[in-house]
Image 1: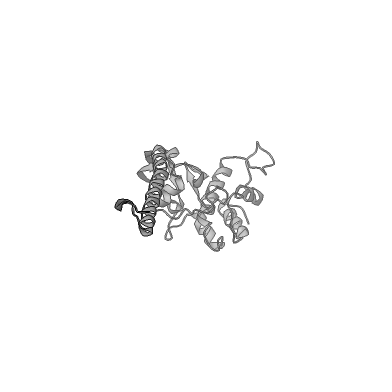
Image 2: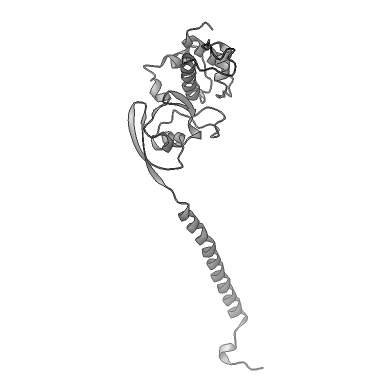
Length: 216
């Protein structure tokens, strides 16, 4: 059969045309697939809020995504890497800092929740040349091995002694109406949220006991 010239496509022409069609369809599909994602990202876009708080005695002003944790604000925005990110689920205590004198897991709280508050990290407790008594006691009693948990342990320990001094009972307090004695059982219970994988617990308790004024 004789075909008109414009319909006399070769096998090569058919293959080229099919490949072009597939490529066009694929590009369109990718575009279609990307568009909802981009739209979704826009609808779930960041909400940037101004945050103002005091960190280690210095006023700090930040503009942060409302979802930024206090831990990330300290480490990523303020570049204060003394506070460690461990489990990031509030289970290990490596990220413990003091907020208004109370110890908290900074990975479990948002930075914007602490407007105007006073935050103390390990850097704010002391320096190598002028250590906080708790830092010095940890050194004397070798209360650390790898040291990763140590900043959180020390911040928590400072908070523990303040809790005892304030008369706040713990799970092992025998009399809820009496002032806690700061016994080793009290210290171990109150420090139970700070995990040390190296197992320096006995040295840590000795250091805290020394600072509390009791005999180890």
